[in-house]
Length: 396
Image (cartoon, rainbow, N blue to C red; front, top):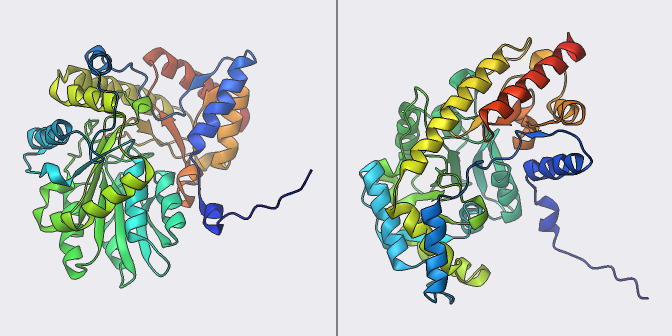
């Protein structure tokens, strides 16, 4: 047999991953071996997709919607996206700027591909969703992190971001409400950023607002669509995965400025042709149908975040800010004197509680763990009891 030495592109050495999936696989393996596992690691709602949405997909299949759609998405869905944004944010969006894609990650990657190359710099939040840095590296641009600061409620400082902008900067990525921190950026910082960007008219802003309907703290969420002065250089990311418990359906959308839309659509043609047609009809029903499921999930995540943060704060040497949105707690564990990855592994292997180390979200995440609130009240309480007992015996 011949031994082949296949040479692949160097860019693939720079691709990252999502540790949450690695933790999930390890947790599942332990569970199969008989260990009691409480999974607070995965970032997806623990609720089922609402029945009326599922039925809409079934109906679409029975009605014969089995073929390709327009690459940008079925027109009714693109119009429904705009109506939904108008209902929630009182903004006007042209359906011609809406691109339906198989999951929000696609918009991250498209943004990096469109604006990143050797010699360019892209700013991104740290700790933040790991695919930001991965996509930037793959584009061959230089990733420039800006810190989400605990003492600012895990917001960014607009001054910090603007101080890193230069003639090489092509894109700035922001995320509010944020994964993994649960932070929501105050309006004053958003306004400072927009005003500061007037000095840099060629820099594009990508706003990841995938958790925008899960806000329950004292900091009010404001969509970047509310700033018309940057509409000609704003990419907005949103979707159905979190809001309607549809992570496995792979449905998201991006709103692109006219100057970039046709290029993003061309990428879509080359990569995935279009999104599954029946899933698009489900997405249409999600937007046009009853919204009580969204309110129910938001109330549940709010209550769970309260339970989790309160119980984490009762554990010696741990401090946890109450999250303002999304469905994560991001406690500070520095006083325990253990690295985040080590504690992640200790908790999973010793007491069966799956979490994700803060370093999975960037180097500014050292000293933190991410706990997902996407589990039942009783499971969260049991997990917190296990964590508390383990830390008391191991570190005190």
